Amino acid sequence: MTGIRIPKGWEIAEALVTDESRYLRRREFIKAASASALLSITGGCRTVPDKPQLEMSRAELSARADAVGPVAFGRAPGPPSFAPGAPSHAFPLPDDRILTDRVTAASFNNFYEFTSRKNDVWRKVGQFKTSPWKVEVSGLVQAPGTFDLDDLCKAMPAEQRIYRLRCVEAWSMVVPWTGFPLRRLLESVQPLARAKYVRFWTAELPKQMPGQRNTPWYPWPYHEALRIDEAMNDLTLVATGIYGKPLLRQHGAPIRLVVPWKYGYKSIKSIVRIELVEKRPATFWNTLEPAEYSFLSNVDPDEPHPRWSQATERDIQTDERIPTLPYNGYGDWVADMY
Ligand SMILES: Nc1nc2c(c(=O)[nH]1)N[C@H]1C(S)=C(S)[C@@H](COP(=O)(O)O)O[C@H]1N2
Ligand SMILES: [Mo]
Image (cartoon, rainbow, N blue to C red; front, side, top):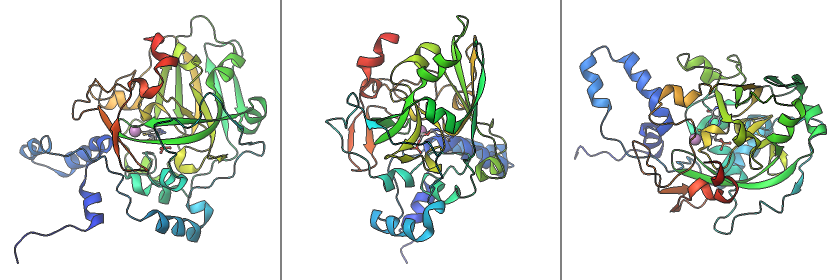
């Protein structure tokens, strides 16, 4: 025996500490460790684990998805009025990218309400009930209201836009969303002039969301916010579908935000409440690690994360490392806001 042991694939995936999950694991570690001297060893050596770490080949995964059935793989009944929407001419597939396969996109997710293990979210979402679903819109508006998702789908006909999505952890994908500009929903409730920010909340359903039960120290429910000009920007999409179908649970069914020029964590999933406010609100990751996750979080290759460079990213479809673009390639639409 040489003492050198080659870990199996799943052990590597298990051992890698992912960026956003580092906080979680550190907390678990702190809970487990009684001697504070031990804490000093958590800071240093770690690699940036940007590889998708798919445990199964795509073919295997497809077969498994068929075998376990549509519910286990995240298929949720969409609102009756869901329609895929016509492909938008303004947002076709970017020239420099290929479309991410839907199984790849649905098997590698960040959705901490279920688990911090990206490869496993799709396995954990089966209990999540996404219909009926209501979204409350309140705060500094003339006409607050609670909207049934089906009524929203009828009132806001959707289009399909292909957007790049860049996670702060330096992986990315390119997927077609079905949705409508957030601006249309906000205009329908008539914001007051005093409204300067828009807050969003995810559902809090610990019985259906094992991650909420297992990590009670997180500030659930997940919450995010945008400045009002960002919220009103044409790019800011409320998504109800992906690949022409209602959103899978792991993608944030039945309704989520997509803010393509910002790091992925701003694109909050499974929204139940929206509020317009005057003061800049707290946001989930910014509260947990303000030095690592800024409020604005615009994609910027020249501004490294404190623990890794943001100059490049790994496409989860091709596994290729590619340059990260300022504003994730959407500067023409958004740069003048900053
Ligand atoms: N409620 C909620 N929304 C969330 C997250 C989350 O953990 N909870 N993760 C975010 C992060 S970090 C990313 S990268 C994207 C991932 O979206 P996807 O799984 O559909 O690719 O969702 C974002 N929205
Ligand atoms: Mo992310």
